[in-house]
Length: 73
Image (cartoon, rainbow, N blue to C red):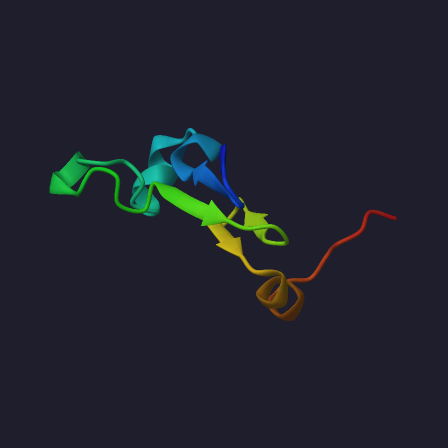
């Protein structure tokens, strides 16, 4: 992750070092003739949430609408 002005640039492939997972999300560069760099970096802004399971950055509005927080009791 790198802080740039008012946002964070996130290297998604580094969040999960599993080659299988990274191939699933298309984060491996030129494997299979893909375009190196496409989808590898995602920008996050203050208030955004990082969904590591689905390799996404979601806005606060989307997070509160589509996600459910599970609490350990």
